[in-house]
Amino acid sequence: MSLVCAISNEVPEHPCVSPVSNQVFERRLIEKYIAENGTDPMNGQPLSEEQLVDIKVSHPIRPKAPSATSIPAILKSLQDEWDAVMLHSFTLRQQLQTTRQELSHALYQHDAACRVIARLTKEVTAAREALATLKPQAGLVAPQAVPASQPAAAVSICLLLQDKATILTTERKKRGKTVPVDLVMAEDLSKYRQVASHAGLHSASVPGILALDLCPSDTNKVLTGGADKNVVVFDKNEEQIVATLKGHTKKVTSVIYHPSQSVVFSASPDTTIRVWSVTGGNCVQVVRAHEAGVTGLSLHATGDYLLSSSEDQYWAFSDIQTGRVLTKVTDESAGCALTCAQFHPDGLIFGTGTADSQIKIWDLKERTNVANFPGHSGPVTSIAFSENGYYLATGAQDCSLKLWDLRKLKNFKTITLDNNYEVKSLVFDQSGTYLAVGGSDIRVYICKQWSEVLNFTDHSGLVTGVAFGENAQFLSSAGMDRSLKFYSL
Image (cartoon, rainbow, N blue to C red; front, side, top):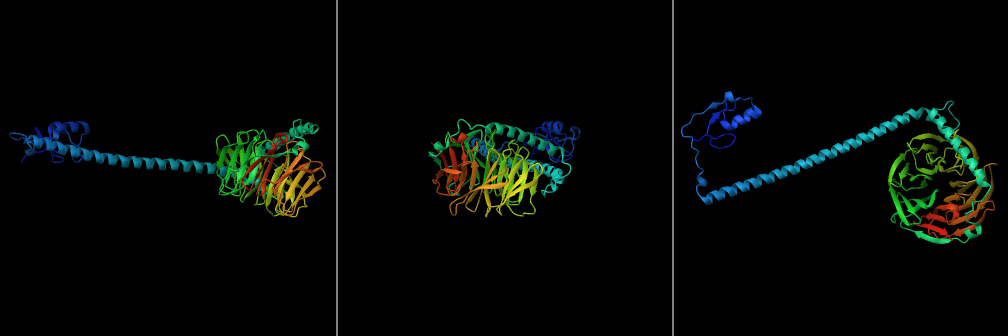
């Protein structure tokens, strides 16, 4: 009976036995293994060269394999070896693929865990900030309850708002003395006709553009919000979409274009206000100021703060850089939803419309309701301040348009519209010379005389947004028929 090495499975030339595992080894091989590992290769127990016991055998002649006695037998042996190597290689490839999948899964789990940790960290930070501001906000819930002492940050913001208002008032007085040279005259405005119509901005499956705004610094950039939950930035000159911003879970009802930055804002009944980067095409901030649908949105003249109104009966003043809600106020005596909101051009007061047909004027610094304008008989749908700061235009579901004098706090003009006319949008041009009304059709009035100079009925659905180009060089409109239209000479 031949001895066989447990490592090489060959007949050893110098056999020896390990007392640890009682296995036979080729001395040359086992000595190398011990030098590298210091253990028995069969059971891993400690083993040294001195422990090895030589086996003395006579005529250690290796028997020849009976199959390797002829060339055909050798070829068959080589073929068998080749087959075995291929099978082993196939098995190794399978094991490699399995290992790769396990590694990929482990990396995915690690990445997901990192994302969850980052999100939780952000939520914890936001919660801590909210907790830090909870006490000052608690005193602001009722507009009459103003804290005796305000935090330093609140005082700083109030001073910033006051300084901006002073600058704006001074500039307005200078501009008010002269009409802009490039402003389109009423006789030319009355000749405006439709020059372009675009119907491919929003999804056809959920038709309707619900909000419209133009970039104040470049009125060729148009911003729309649709029933398809998307916000779209459109270039009027190039006639192409610049960005489609997706993230809201419900329709977009309010949009604003920042006057000096490549940033836009949107609000939705999904209770969120989103801040978008136009160049990046992504949402950079989500403001969660309300617990019900957001109904109105207005940007402060500083470009740093947002006013919002909601069905939860609150208006909120938020920082767009941090997404933090600085104050949140409701009129507890009214107890009804707010339907729209708009800053006065100075930025120190603003107006809100309510579902019970009231227009309320608020002092931002004191967070108090300083004036009310009753007179409408339906929910207020839109409000707009004139650029000169003296007039306020309001529309409601009572087929009427009312003009209010903010100096005398009274209604000085009521324009009765057609039966069943729905006012959806009101906007003054940048000079305060014209007032555009969007609803069942498009109408433009010249201020002071309040006479109609334009009337367009090109939309096949309700007109939800109207806006003037720079110096009234063109008029844009959007409606439930999913079209964006432009009018000019």
